[in-house]
Figure 1 (cartoon, protein in one colour):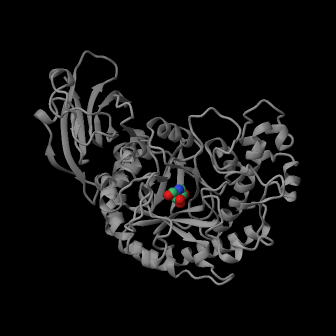
Figure 2: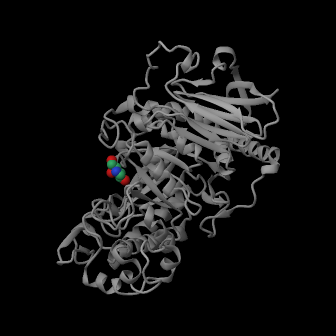
Figure 3: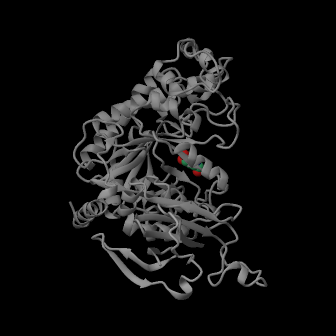
Length: 562
Ligand code: DGJ
């Protein structure tokens, strides 16, 4: 254990003692299997989750690289961006085609370089297994898989026409993918079990199928007529009132094709994850290319990838893939209603919130506060490296530092308290808002207190005081504000945010008293977990609320009553 970790663990035990009335009850691992002490794992209590890294909750301030940056040479353009971003975790692919170019011959030299350099840069790694399916297609499989339809069958439509997508019923495909994944997990175990550089695995990438609801090959047709397995019936309620059990069509009606395909893909992934975890038990998740979270529920009509862990199909993944901890959304719509609806749909008692991907454009920056405030395990903007590849229109038109820095400022403020934040989140003490597209005020209900967050305010005075002033503050043309709050004791709060004004008012039983700021300290937590004050805000800096500028700072706020 290094010095910083031992300080941290001391700090966390002190924190737990200090807050013993709210002490954390014994927790349960999400997937209970044998693992070495302090190996990364996901635990949950009362529907809240913590990703344990080196024995304490950890929040991933992540950055996902572009799709072809998974080679030693390309890493040279990854690290400077990760550093500018102040990320603590890099999400990066490892492709089947690169570790097993020739069948049976494994080459892990890239993985070794990656792990060594990640350690040098003091960041953790989430490995993205690009195997049978990457954005539903087989492009990351080795050539000996890609072009051998006989051995590795593709799906078929109703007329027997071959689809681009590999069939989830390909027994040889599953065997070969599983073999490669197990070899990878074995290698990671050998190289990393004492380091814990790799903290999570993503199994496949954005699975499902576009343009075809399911496999219609003769083999698939036989299975489609079979009864829905009990585990699926136990988890997934039919959206239509039909038979309680029976064939897929009898139970799920017009949804049967999609749910049958979901079950087939989830079962395939389960085999891979289960075999990988038997070798080296890391938390594992699947990521999802979303269906519209606001559209009324309706059967698949070519409007999303059928078979993926869309929000309506999470239950089927829970039933068929118990070795997958999380179904996680990739968010590429900056629309504030959709963003929030997606979080609502994926954050569930049985499913931890984590965003493996989100757009890297300026419109997404504000969501860092919402996501971290909601107690997510972490998130990663996508396309973070200096290969000069722009992700527009999904993400930013910009590349390089201008794209990275707006996120970097937030990560820089969070990083010194990343462990404290993860602990508070696990205890249910954190809250967050992102400025919505309508720019309206938002409130947060805290224990006995209420926070009101407003946007586009000048830093002096209240809106009504200067009716003649029509100008608006700089850098607020797009919604750019956000605030995250942790209530660390009855009357104390950690507040961090940008382009927003925060007020806090008493909301407990009315005893005729008035509340006011006691202290508003700007500062940071040091490596031993001690709060270090840099200055105290007062006068113009507090008279009209706490005005958070474009440079996020951490405030430790104490409220009082008179
Ligand atoms: C989602 C995928 O999961 C990523 O690998 C990438 O292709 C992005 N879409 C788009 O850049």
